[in-house]
Image (cartoon, rainbow over all chains, first blue to last red; front, side):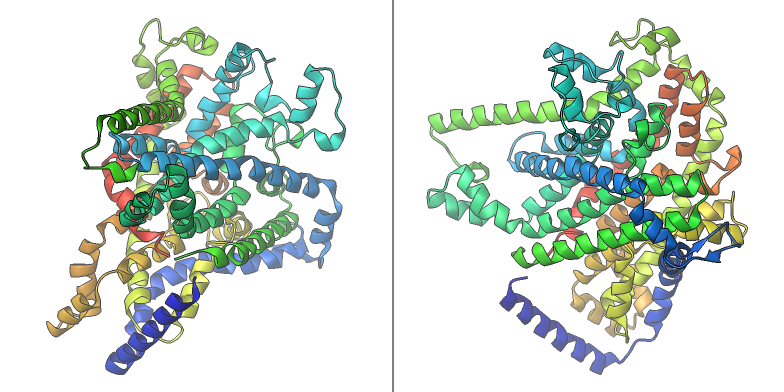
Amino acid sequence: MSGFASLERMAHDRATTRNHISRRGVEWTAFLFILPAFVLIAAFHIFPVLYAIYISLHTGAINRFTYVGLDNYIRALEGADFWNALSVTIWYVALTLPATLVLGLVLAYLLYQPIRGRGIYRTIYFLPYVISTVASSIVWAWVFDPQSGVANLILQRIGLAPLRWLIEPSGIGQVMGAQVGVSLPGWAQGPSVALIAVAIFTIWQSLGYVTVIFLAGLTNIPGELYDAAHIDGANALQLFRHITLPLLTPTTFFVVVISVIASFQAFNQIFAMNTAAAQTLGGPLGSTSTLTVFMFDQLYTYANYGYASAIAVLLSILILVLTLVNFRALGARVQY
Amino acid sequence: MTFTRGRALPSADRLRRDLGHLLLHLVLIAGAVSALFPFVWMVLNSLKGYTEAAAGLDILPKRWLFSNYVTAWNQVGLFPRYFANSIFIGVATVLGVLVTSTLAAYAFARMKFPGRDALFLIMVATMIVPFEVTLVPNFILMRDLNWIDTYQALIIPWSGSAFSVFLLRQFFRSIPQDLYDAAVLDGASHLRFLIDIVVPLSKPALITSALFTFLGSWNSLMWPLLVTNSPQMRPIQVGIASFITDAGTQVQLLLAAVTISVVPIVLVYLLLQRWFIEGIATVGLRG
């Protein structure tokens, strides 16, 4: 928030608040209004967080927990599985987040132009977001089918070797390298081909949502600003750089914050794609096992409640820190 | 490009603008095709015979087998039951969320009471917590309440929504204070004012909140997977997911089932999208 305007607003808020209180006093009925929502949120969203922390310090089956201190956390941080899941998560976010944001902004900017059929385009672009992940993953598993899928058809058309997509655990660098006869060292092998396929699916699914939000942000920018800059002789690119981007920062900030949270929490896309490709949870050789998938596996398959909770708590801390970093790094640059 | 609207242009400029628009349409159409093609493919293959669909080579079906839909409806597990379950759970959850969130959002937006900001902050903070963290404790809670395999387990935990409270509060705050002052002069209470004035004025925000809630409920997978055991209690996504893993799945039937599962949500979206877009535009993104 730029300093002065916000100070003024705060002063105004303060003044009106004082007025209201002196006029009407404390309205105790407010608590009745809040009660139903608060009870539900407290019972199923706040209390479980505290309970999860408690469980993460225990081991054993439900109702027979034994206190083990920080053992579950130590087990996670010392084991290879956790770090593998963390690196898969980071690859997944790196593959989906920047592409979604950039494509979403570009699409929104194109849709913002005064052309015919904007409403229809917008409706169509948002559609993938509305459809359930289970439904669209079945279709996308077919797109990535090694024998008859569209993805390999396209690769062959442009003269590339087909890939095994959702059932290919090797890194993309390794697969590409092998095709030209080069074997790459471990660090250059990159994310698995299976994870890339899931990421393409995720981008397709979430792009419409980001586009609609950016579009809403663009519509809030006063048109006179463009008129004025145009009279001053600014070209389209300059308009975009010096008016659109700066005035869009509140929207961009909002989109970045929620997208970071959503992509670190992603589960359905991966789970559904693994299922649709007839893979076990986590994909081929665990190469699509993000932290959420790994955690669900520990919970659902192995009934390791304490360990699963410890992983969940670690993931929450990670998301919380990243959100705070976003607020620090981006929040300060938001221009109102 | 926006600034050219409604202004007479020299013909060279007009030509340039038209060319620009043509190019724009080409890009946008390419985007629309990539957004839509999986659905088109899905519907076309759901109408093929088994061998044809399994091969998946031709684009159009040789014979259009609309009977696949009847077969899917009757043969994919307890499909009608999954479908009815999901509609019931979705509608109940939406009602719950709308009632609880409207009341709470109104109090946060309009009323004065000690601890208001702190309570609001606590509620909003729950949005940052990954859903997965609450999974184990909520599962245990369901067990202790004996709610496993019941509708309560699928509805009540999701009937309070911090996101909806946040969304509606933003919207309610934009309603002019004068309206309230006038209503008070007429002797209206907060509840009267909320029901008679605020709710009708907040249609876009309420519809946005309803649509997101219904979407979340209809499309949810992980939670119903955990808290349902018997096929009778399964919502549609779990039903379809289990059909995938069933041995010898008939692809064309699976795709017909998936198409049926998609229809209600697409209808709801198409009917409500005007309000919904307005809701997103007015609520989330005002500084």
